[in-house]
Amino acid sequence: SHSRTDAQDLAPFVTTPMAVVEKMLELAQVSHNDLIYDIGSGDGRIVITAAVLYGARGVGIDIDPENVKESQSNAKKAGVSKQVKFLLGDATKMDISEASVVTLYLLPESNALLKPKLERELKDGARVVSHNYSMPGWEDRELAFVEMKDDAGKEHSIYVYKK
Image (cartoon, rainbow, N blue to C red):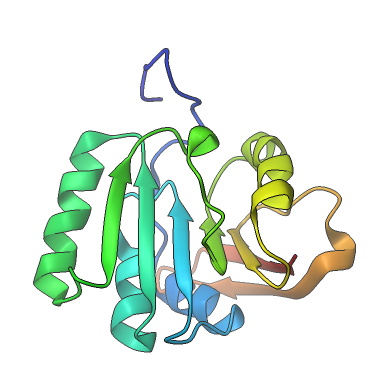
């Protein structure tokens, strides 16, 4: 919980293991033509990895200024500062209409809260990749579902949807 009264709390900060990040991007068929938006971007690993592995551009949105600073530092270390940027703010109030891929690792109720925004703002053909939690009511949009274990043996689910 970020304890801000002016912004929606979508999930606690929990990092996505790198093996899961790489599988999320692979399942979304990310390419150099994509603009990835990661809602709740934490340390920036998803958009940075998309830039490094696929040449994609990326935007991370996070509510915590320390996460944004760490992400910017991580992007610089990875040599992708020109391809990615990190925004401080409430993702429920930010424009995501330019995204061709949106990644999420949020709580189920947060996915439900964001669903109308995703439906309203994303262009047809955009992909939404959710770690561990499905998007309610989007069963007919599901392109892929994978269960996998990370390096520590913990189970993860990945859902990929197309608008």
